[in-house]
Image (cartoon, rainbow, N blue to C red; front, side, top):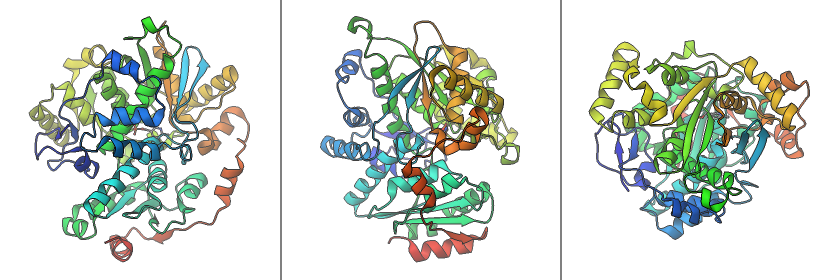
Amino acid sequence: MQYISTRGGGEPKTYSEALLEGLAIDGGLLVPEQLPTVSAERLESWRALNYPELATEVLGLFATDIPRDDLAALCAAAYAPSVFAEPVPLTPIGDGLTLVGLSEGPTLAFKDMAMQFLGQALEYALERTGGVLNIVGATSGDTGSAAEHALRGKDRISVFMLSPQGRMSAFQRAQMYSLQDANVHNIAVDGVFDDCQNLVKDLAGDIAFKTAQHLGAVNSINLARITAQVVYYFWAWLRATDAVPAAQRPGFAVSFAVPSGNFGNILSGFFARGMGLPIRRLVLAANENNVLDEFFRTGVYRPRTSAQTLATSSPSMDISKASNLERFIYDLVGRDPQRVRAAWTLLADTGSFDFTADLARFADEFGIVSGTSTHDDRVATIRAVHERSGRIIDPHTADGVKVAAEYVEDGVPMLVLETAKPEKFGETITEALDIALPLSADLQALLAAPQRVVEIGNDEAALRAIIEADALH
Ligand SMILES: *Cc1c(COP(=O)(O)O)cnc(C)c1O
């Protein structure tokens, strides 16, 4: 299996090469040359597998350059019981909806599912080449902590994670800053998230510095993350059909609802559907920053600036420029790189592009529908789900449940991806349910643990000095 750019440039890459790539050399995104397919018989033969075994089968279709035994070891380590006590439980919550639990990992959000695999795969690839890697990233909360927890203690990788001083929740700060591993470097910047992001971009643009310091990234366009997320769509379908009589299982359709920001999670579902998994609808749920809902309802994509992006109570979805959308557009235009380039040129020149003529195909051919959820919807949904099932859901998952309810169909299970645990967002839970969420002893200890962070101004020279002093070479 080879990976090519959506814009047609560069040489095809292997999976191991794609692991370490951000953007392709021509500014496009890497996609599989052709999606692997899984027959109904093959799918059925995976029913008895545990999560790491299933991950080995699914990722084995993508990572064809990694020997099968090695891949099995990477998956066993990434999804070990010490990391995910129970990987991906399914829980019915009434009204035809079932939660798919993706937040059982160390940082209580779904990003652990992909990042834990990526951490294992990166260390493996670096051992084979004898290289080292210094990951530099910017975070507003969930991504940074998932990356640090996946990479802590690795021998050939260090992490420099920039975060905006005083702008994360106490919980998010504790998850990152309490790590005492020598290869984890927390840097709090006097500024907002965009300032952190710009510092990272400026460094990555300095090719000489990037090469000399062995810099890399693990952001949401990383192809390994997308492929690792494909696994849980297969897992959820298998568990949702365990009780279906065997004769009815082939082609048994389910729908998924996905709280979305950068279009990474739902893109993995789109890949799973393209591989032959019987998915009827992929329901994209947006919060008030609903650029993607606008696109899937009207065919017009018009990203917003960071100044136009609202700070909401589902903060991990406060994104107005969906970096993975290009991979969907690539399929929409018949995998024609020239048409992808034309769309992005138009976007740069005019601030939008328009696929109104293809609007009917979004749902009919690709299965994608969408909706928006607001703060009031989140609060009402958290309350309603708690009343009917006793279950407390987080605000992002609530966005998913709210929009999912608009698309429930008779006889089609609606599986809502739970993207975070409510403990991470206690304030909104208190507003909805009028209770203070009790924290486990582990979480209380986390909040009380000593923290380790270096504070700098919004200053590229200071950042360079830290990296030069502490990077692995
Ligand atoms: C990152 C994140 C999302 C959005 O996922 P995308 O892949 O960016 O669409 C949703 N919910 C939570 C809790 C997240 O951390």
